[in-house]
Amino acid sequence: MEVKLNSRSLIDEVLNDDIFGDLFNTRSYVHQYCPAVDIDEAGDSFEVVVEVPGVTKEDLKVSIHQNILSVSGKRSASSNDGRRRIVSEISRGDFSRKFKLPSTVNVDAVTTEYANGILRIKLPKQEQSKVKEIPIH
Amino acid sequence: MTLIRWKPTHDIASWTPMADLSTDLFSMQDEINRVFDRFFNRGIADDNNLRINNWYPNVDVTEKEDAYVMKAELPGVSKEDVKITLKENLLTIHGEKKREKEEKDKSYFRSERVYGSFERTFTLPSLVKGEKIEANFKDGVLTIEIPKAEEVKPKEIQIKAA
Image (cartoon, rainbow over all chains, first blue to last red; front, side, top):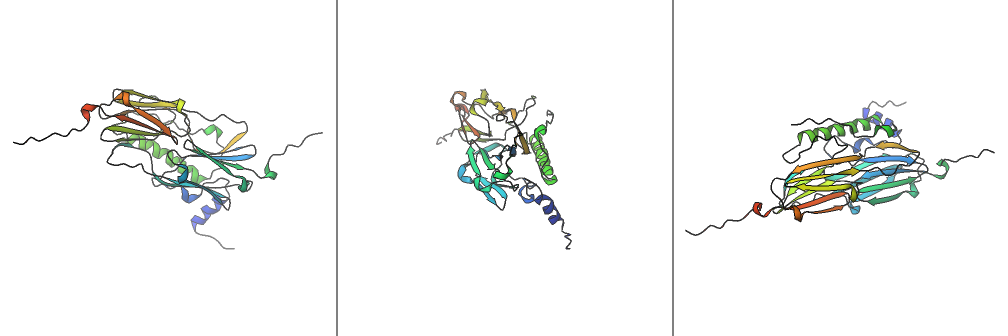
């Protein structure tokens, strides 16, 4: 059996077992824009809510590849044309967040909705994973 | 310099611990960065009052030749829940970010969004024309433009020939 001494692959292993685990390289310590995300499960679907104020729909990209959900985009810097900055807290630039989806997600039925700076991704569960109530006779 | 008590902004009660350790460390790092940023980047403009708020929206304030422009990130806040007030040259935005209506049997895998009341006050460097203030709200960003008062606009001074 091959023993992996590289500590990075050990972390990969741990992360790969995680449902909705945040993949390692998408959040860095460097000052980078990282939108806040809520993920919840209600009944027969999951919902991923991403706060991306100031990002236009055209600058947003949502994709799923091999059960990894990826939300990325960019927040363009507003044209400054000779303005002096007094307070500057809004971060700009590219962002990207990736989440590993549980296998119960029906990838073909995923829908998205974007309004008022909030992106909502609805991930329905596959038929057989929905909770089925069994009647008692 | 006033000390402001750090109030953790995550809703710990609804958290279901499914995240791995690295994510928790990153969010803690983020949280600490945010606290330090607020503490040290006070700058001339931000006069945070002593009221403890649940969260602080990120804000940009820029100065044009004839106006000040302020942008505040308020995703998920509805227009009715934000108030803007201007007193002389003190500009305040305050309001509340409400949770969407609670659904029963909802469990969280990840909860990074913050909710609750917020308030921020800024001292604009010079006098402004309050009655000409304009605000609009698009894509979760509130943009406020306030023209400067006439007296403080830069005026070119003619040099008379000798």
